Length: 124
Image 1 (cartoon, rainbow, N blue to C red):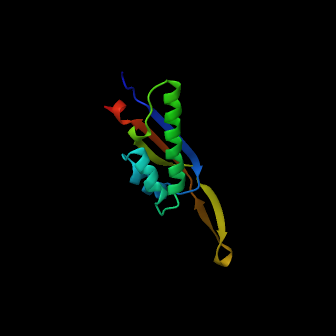
Image 2 (cartoon, rainbow, N blue to C red):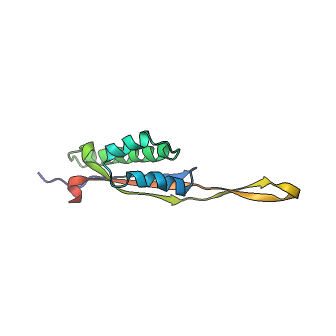
């Protein structure tokens, strides 16, 4: 029986968290097993951990669906985070009143979070 690579990919776009803060969380899980990554994110104190966890769980579910369609063996314990990154999305610009009739710009940044999970056997 040949084991082929099962890959699941998920992306969350326009998440209202700064890319710098999202990258801090994404760096925690890169290279870990998928189940370990979900456990780490469940208890991480950062606010960005919740959207990243949802993306990881979605990538795992996508890998399961892909394996079922191809009628391949699927074991969630074999998956690991092969690629994970947080790109910058569009920035919303807002203005805040300041002293002496001035206004200052507030930048509300967004992120695009992408996670790819791959089967360990298929990567070899």
